[in-house]
Structure formats: C-alpha cells, structure tokens
Image (cartoon, rainbow, N blue to C red):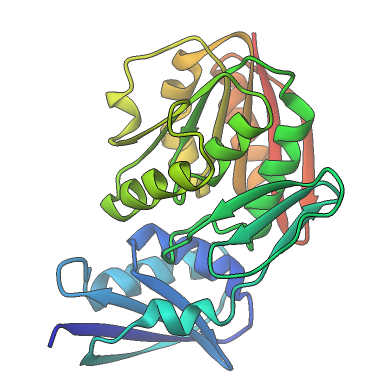
Length: 282
C-alpha cells in the first residue's frame, strides 16, 4: 500500500491559519488542525522533506508569527484522508447572497443566493479561509460585467469561477500544481462555467495574454512581491488588481512594491488578521 509522510507541527502559539498559509506553499496533500498544532500530509512523490518544512517554519519564525516550534515525522499507510477531512467542511455564507457549497453537503438556496459549488480535494481555496472570502467580497464590488479576468495561483479555481458567475466574460486561472489543475477543471464543470474559465498549469511568465480588466492574486507576500512586474505587465490601463494572502505587517511593503510598478492604491479590507488590497493600474 502507498505510504504517506505526516509532519506534525507544534508551534508555541495558536496562529494556525497564518502558519497554514505559509505551509500550503509546500503543496501538501492536506493540512489538518489538531489540538496543539497542525498535521501536513504528503505522498512520496510530493514530500519536500523535513529540511524544507523546517526552512518554512524558520521563515514564519523570522516574521514574528511564532517564537519556537517542534516537528514530528511519521510514515504511515495511506487511506482516504479526504473522507476524514470532509467531515469538518461546511457550507459557507460569504455574504447575504453568496454561498459556497461543498459537493458533499446538502443545501437549499434561499432567495437569490448565488451558489458556488466546490469539490475542494484539499486544495487551498475552499472558501473557509478569510483571504478567499475577502477576495470574493471584493469581486462583488469591482466586477461590473463583461470583464476579462486573470486568477494567479488559482488553487481550487474558486475565484475565477466566482468572477464569471458574478458577471465576468471570461477568466484564465493558473497554478503550478497538478492537483489544482484537475480540481479546477472539475469545479468549472460543476458550476457550468467550463466554456468561460480556462484552467492552466503554468507560471505567470507563461501567460502570454495581456490587457486583463481584473487580476486576482491570493498568494503569500513573498510571491506577490516577486511577480509584481509580471502582474503589472498584464493589467490594462485602468484595470483593477486585487491582492490577498496578506497580514497587517505586510501592507506597507506590498503597497510600496506595487505603486512602484504603476499602480495606485484604492483601499484595504480586512477580516481578522488578514488583509486584501485593491489597486488600479495607471
């Protein structure tokens, strides 16, 4: 039977959502919150090794989010982790008229609610995380209909799907993870937007299209800083850029980076410790 490596992370505080946001960059099959920490699951093909886990935790430590941590490593027999994880996923009310429904949960729409149906497959972007909610709320505000959208680091595809269902004409959604490609394709089909959302496995540099009306990037701060020029090159004059995956301490650095690349700050919104920046291309 296939083996799974489980890393149990025991930090000295309970900033689990912040820690998870960093750890998702390692592309685990899943992250599970336990009483005193987090468990990361990797199959043999994607296991980065304990040194990579430690390096990421040291980065979190350097950011001041934790002071210390312990790691325990265990190799176990594979089983249906998705089935176990699904038990903890629920229907999410993003706003009064926008709901995210996992495929494995029953839900009857109320009034004019817009339903996004997601089969998460443990991809980041199920709608539970505050950064995803912030982006969906921003889409409701900044989409007026007919836009051409780019979703950078799409995860489950939820933001691209949400953009089209909220009125965008089309969306290109990309990620460098094969898990995300398969999941994104499935979620587009579930939401009947496969003709308007194109899922790609690639990096930003592989996106040849430009002049996007709206670009979405819900990614960790360091990556956002690295791709600032690439996002600027692909945003049309007067276009909107929405950035999330950010903490309060990240705001000045990221805003300065993007204003240097030709954007004007519009606003910041927040949910608990997380932030979303809206900018306009000059």
